[in-house]
Amino acid sequence: MEPAVLASAQAMLRAVAAGISYDHIATAHGVAKSTVSVRVRRLAHTLQQIVGVLDVEEDASPSASLLRSHRHAYLEALEHFRPSAAPMLHRAPATLTPAQIDMLLMKIARHSHCPLRDQALLLVLFSTGAKPMEIAQLTVQDYLDAAGHVRRQSVLRAAIASNGADRPLPFDCAETISAIDAYLAERPGAEPGTQDAAGFRGLDPVSGLFLSRDGRPLQVRHTRGGQAACKEIHDIYRRIFSHGGLAGINTACARRMAALRMQAHGASTREIGDALGLKRPAVLRLLKCAAATQATMRRQQGMRARAP
Image 1 (tube, one colour):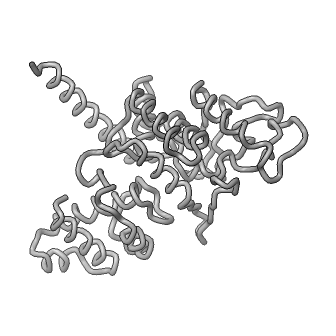
Image 2: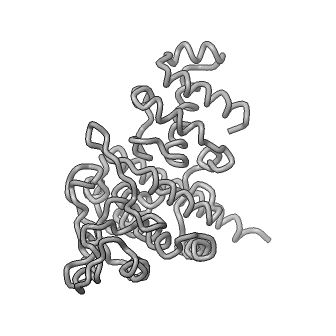
Image 3: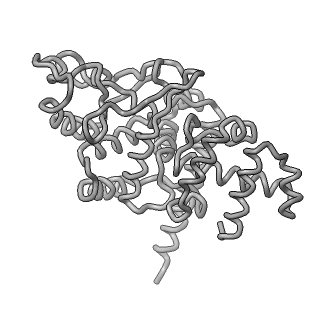
């Protein structure tokens, strides 16, 4: 967005959150009602994915009712919004190639204050397609059995799943397993509640699989409606992606890539939704966005190949 358009989008979002109708906002700004809707939705969606809106899923559809019911959370996110860090306003969301993931892992190793944890978090995100809020609530025993073996076909428990239902949680990627194991190997001597017995590799089985940099549990709170929220995990992922300097990259890219993988293996829309905890419209949006991105990448590669 151009600066003037961005400024108007911010003013429009504040007005919608305050309960002003789209018709009145359109008249005040001298634009069509559809323009108000497009600008507000693009900005709200960017806030969800780049800044994080408390109690709102990053891929939720930012309707007027959602904006108004979570008014204070959106306005707080807007206060922390930095347009220069929001490539989603300038181009379509991207997916990552294996080479880009490898590059990002190297950047994490160089720049992160907690590189082993952050590398493991990145790989868990892309190999499982789980949401950040779900990953924040994983425990050691979700990953390991009592003998210390990896649960290669674990279960994302209904208690922490965004859709409130058990669903598969595969730890079947060798690179992901190696990264998590390297991170866990750092923890037994310093983690509060460490057990002396060899079970669960000496770790407390109900402790978080991932902890804050100083060894505390990630701060998860629950709303009155029972929905979990963890600003800390979203902050961690934003820092992780900032190391790579890749435009359009955020945690939603992982679900787009997971949906494409399953579709390539013959999974139906319903099966993809069941695996990722998404409803059919959300799955269709993921696949459409991912397909568009891949088509753009193929066109760009073709143009480079034809260049003299």
